[in-house]
Amino acid sequence: MERRFDPAGPLRGSLRLPPDKSISHRAALIAAMSEGETRIDNYLDAADTRSTLAAVARLGAGVEALSGEGSSRSLTIRGTGLRGAQEAEIDVGNAGTLLRLLPGWLAGQGEGCWTLDGDDSIRRRPVDRVAEPLRLMGAGVECREGRLPPLKVTGARLTGIEYRLPVASAQIKSCVLLAGLLADGETIVIEPVPTRDHTERMLEAAGAEITVEGRSISILPIDRLRGERFLVPGDFSSAAFAMVGAAIVPDSELVIEGVGVNPTRTGLLTILDRMGAEIHVGEEPDLDAEPLAVIQVRFDELEGTEVGGDEVPLAIDELPLVALAGCFAEGETVIRDAAELRHKESDRIASVCEGLAALGADVEPTEEGMVVRGTGGLRGGTIDARGDHRLAMLGAVAGFASREGVTVRGAEAAEVSYPDFESALGSLASG
Image 1 (cartoon, helix red, strand yellow):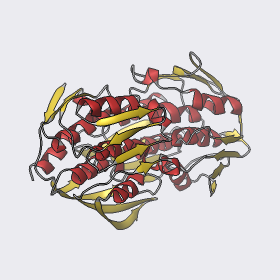
Image 2 (cartoon, rainbow, N blue to C red):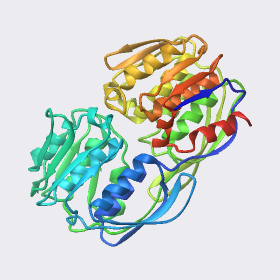
Image 3 (cartoon, rainbow, N blue to C red):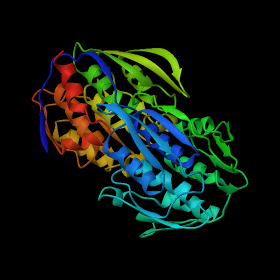
């Protein structure tokens, strides 16, 4: 589906966000692993998170929808218990988080076999990074060409290990921690740099014994997780599109309410502040284990910056938007140490550079990032989303800020994480 996004006047008004996708996935999985019922409020109703609900139902969990409005749902999940997963073939759709987290639970079932597969995009996303630690723990794991889905997991009696992540990845870390719940002995994960910690927070709330010391996270085996109540905050990664839109469309001023501001997710705030955007973060009382805030963003002139090292995992999903902001900034914006972008729904280094270049940007890909030379704006044109929800939404924001407008091919990809994106952004542009 093609959609046209014409140049807009100032983006103004307030915005309520869809629920956080990363936390929604984890809430459903941990609820399925628990005993008893777990209530989840503000669960994201989108393609990826529906895949997770379908998966836990196939594994034997009871899923009951209670109510909902827009992209938000309240539901209850009756868990199978830690070792109660039924054998099944799982279709993960386009949900990379599901593909990489779920094997950790299944690997420790003791017996049984599960196959995880998905759409064409998923079949290009490597899974060897989760297969390796699970094999070291004793599980049987097979994948196509040694690294690609479908992924076959054979349950086994697992042994705890100390595992140093080869790359900074919250998904690999979470997979190993879930397996550690079912392993004999302690499991320790050591990160090269800190990554998002939603899994640790939510497992601890459900009764797991987790210790975090610097970049070392340890977990002990447990007999049961208890059913909890999870309230999912607004998705920071969804807020990021409106934030960058306000930062690059002249005279814009936005208020974004109910944003989850877990410090392992909010690197974009620091980056935009460094570039010169006018941002104010007003903390709200914590929502369960996750901090919340109201974020105000006003347009201001931007300057190029450099993003790399420990900052990358804190903004990995928002780095394409940093590149977009760099098009409107004075000087160069350099993104480095971000090779993980090549393993997302698309190769986001190649797709972002080619997409922005088609709109008139002066942008160059590197092996682990990109260099953007600010030209004061974008001409406009056509961008292909390549089935990647974040590229589809980037194209829309670019259209509002461009001189001639942008046509987004495959704009429906945005529904994966932000079903109401077009209408939400449009309401701000007409404000």
